[in-house]
Image (cartoon, rainbow, N blue to C red; front, side, top):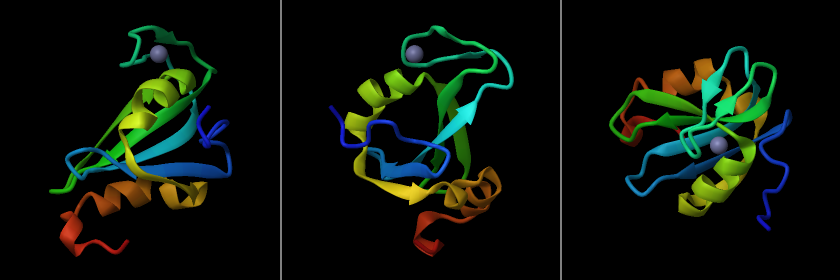
Length: 109
Ligand SMILES: [Zn+2]
C-alpha cells in the first residue's frame, strides 16, 4: 500500500521525477471526454475521476497523459523519484506550461 493512497485529490497533487530527470506532476481530474489509459489501454469514460500525468521536460516543453487512478498508482508511482505531495493549486496547467517554457536549470523550484 502506497503512502500516497487516495492521492492525487482535489486539494493535493503529487510531484516526482522520472529517470531522465523530467518533472512528473500527478493531478486529479474528471474526464471531459473519453480517454485511453496508457497503462492498461482501457477506456477512461467521460465523468470518471482519474489521474492526469503532466510532464515538464528537463530541456523544456510539456506533455500529459490520462491514466486510471489505480494504474498510475501501480505502474507509475514506483518509477518516480522524490515523489511528494504538493498543493493542487501549484499544479494548474497554465503554471506547468509556463514552467515548461524554460529548461530546468533556469526554473525556480
Ligand atoms: Zn488503466
